[in-house]
Image 1 (cartoon, rainbow, N blue to C red):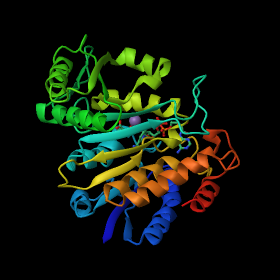
Image 2 (spheres, rainbow, N blue to C red):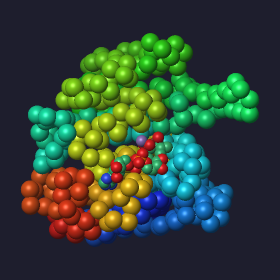
Image 3 (cartoon, protein in one colour):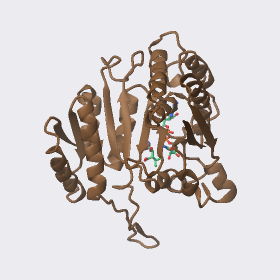
Image 4 (cartoon, rainbow, N blue to C red):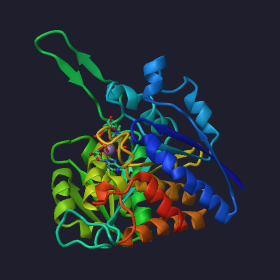
Length: 351
Ligand code: NAD
Ligand code: IPM
Ligand code: MN
């Protein structure tokens, strides 16, 4: 069966890591005997600077027919982030109802954690981040500038449907893992949204008597991601808290350059999108040293999603083999001196 995938390299190191991942698509489709067509869309900040828009007006309609989307990164030093992100990445997540964001945080063998005393395998959890509403809802925002008492209002919206969906996805995942869910809130301060969230966790947890539930406030959770990361299994959090916690999850497991993610449309009505957790990394753009592995692991999650789990496993295993090999090339974020291209060249010999 032929799979059609849209690729949106985007900005900064986005095109570097997507170009690096491209041959991996060719390798797995050859090896596992399926057709895979990758169509590239040059949407992003360069387009915005030339034409005033990040993507065409009918961009979502254009993407709707694909089986999946692979995205690099969005964000450019010459364009405000709220413009670039609210006109490309976030409309795709929201427009395609990609409500469940899965972000694994795994300390792979051969990778050094900045936390002392942690070896490969010691950290292995997954964050389920609510991905379409919450603090990113962008509803009823107001600014009243131009006088001495300026006010800006940014509302958060939590629906029962959206909250139940992410919480249930986390409990389901826990049944396939170690049976532990940690729910992150700030219900000591946010008496509406987060108390509502707690209530939904309680309701859903009643359906999963074999799953144990821990509740943590986000400030304490940030500390515990550093202090006792080995104790987490499935972590479920709102859009903003999940965003922040997954950068912590990435760095304690070695690098932003190793953290993959899946933005899943659970109804299957629209394509899901796969992308690294990291951004466009303007500090290293053009140096040819961006770590491509977060994107390649995201591609492995994409293959799984398409039902090509042999291909997904082969790519995931090739990456873990490479990381475990002390003689393999590594990019500077992992303490090496290799280029992006060299890492991919070596990886291809392992697929
Ligand atoms: P960032 O993730 O781009 O970079 C943070 C740090 O991690 C930098 O030091 C960077 O060099 C390093 N890093 C990131 N990816 C790496 C990789 N693959 N290999 C090696 N090192 C890597 O975060 P930032 O600097 O806060 O944001 C830069 C821009 O990206 C901003 O415009 C931001 O809005 C945007 N952003 C986009 C996304 C996305 O498209 N999904 C995600 C995060 C940030
Ligand atoms: C991420 C990013 C995005 C987010 C930004 C760029 C809007 O940080 O994917 O983690 O907050 O979701
Ligand atoms: Mn983020």
